[in-house]
Image (cartoon, rainbow, N blue to C red; front, top):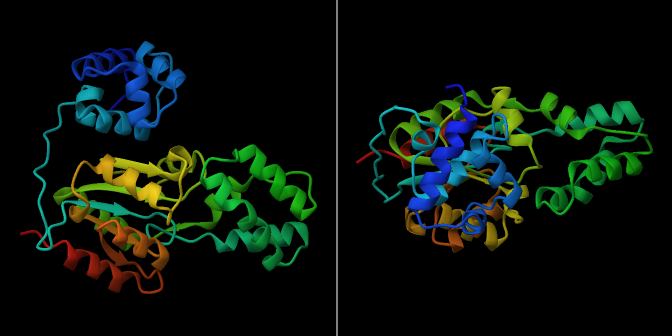
Length: 280
């Protein structure tokens, strides 16, 4: 559907007023900057991120289609035998194979050993994924650590990752029966690029929890509290599919259902997800 920025702005404003929210209130609830919201309402942003619009729709308690002016019928959602009605999927190591090949490529460029490249990367990764460091700052710091003038990490990352097809199929199947969302530690702007490149499923995500936007990373409790609130269901109705044991343990402490994804055995792991989500 082509984006009608003016129409979107009018529908967004009308929905906000019906919900009795000021712009400041909506910004806080949708984790959105005031300037971005006012520009969207004025129709001044051309093709705003679909993930941003989804977050706004969730905060307002309306459907994405209502804000976009679409006519697609709503799908009936279900509940699994274990009580799950909402599924969060991790991205790295779950929907895409991890990006370790990027370290090898950077090592070849710089002449530094791959383990040194990886150590330099992880030194800053949490800060940029939490939104405490911009991508420009991260690129500058990484280049300095590696003794080169410039590096654009997103290029190496996008070239290194590969979709996990069976999990794309599972995510699409889950979206036909449940509300689904993304819950990921990731750098600013990466999700939109991944979606445009077809590296993650192009689905209607009810909620997208981007660590760099919410200011918290897994396994911190804050990000799971935000994700529970955004899902709009009880913690006992949420399932997290993730490849990190630490993240799963943190989610379990919040009362979520959890399922470990092993990207070395993707077919087996995908079957476990499907079994866990058998519709009743």
